[in-house]
Image 1 (tube, rainbow over the protein chains, first blue to last red):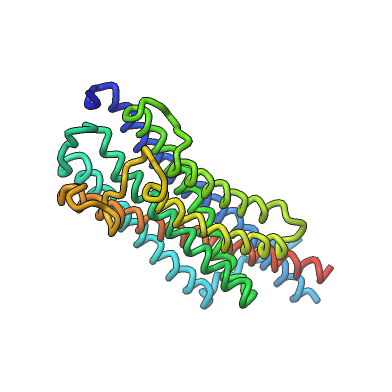
Image 2 (spheres, each protein chain N blue to C red):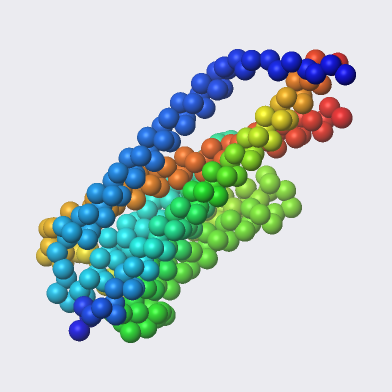
Length: 54
Length: 248
């Protein structure tokens, strides 16, 4: 009989893996975006200062 | 040494555009979050129990939408790849890459959720049968798409090679979809759509499946926007670095 308590762990695993994967992906993308935006700001500031200096 | 005074930040058009972009992304995030909470209620409370599979059949409401959205993602990659090869614009390449990456994520989850669903129903984690095998091939094709971009001698060349893979790779999507019809397959037949037998899925389950599809589509839209924004920032950073190098 399929509907036994032993099958619920599989159902839990399906939902858990799905949501953890989405959260981890969204977190990694967001973190990388913040890092790169910081670098972009720094480079722009450096270029501005260089052009003012020259 | 005098300390330089920090000047107040003046909002630029770019700042306003970014703020608008963030507002829409946040709206998508909230919408998909609310939809998912409602979806969980529908899946676990509203949808009736299946007489054959019991509770584990509720994997349907995750596994099937993940598969459909992965097809959508690779379709978008196809369009982006064609337009990139035709127009040469980085925006189309950004769309193709972003959608392919999320498509690989969704296809990975299709395979993983399928494995966890197969074990209690078929008694085995995996079978080399048409639907599973062609889905694995689909996953390998788009992993190759991402790897070609990473290992190409230069980014432009990598983008072009990947675009070719993104176009040819879409051939496997209809093969995956029709595999349960064309070959003998132990995978479940279509439960919705023109190829499904009438009455395969009761109306209550079908409506939950459709709502689940909408929920995952909202999530896909949010992730795609975020990944696109990241790609654009990567391209902007590369341009800035090139400018800095040229001035040195």
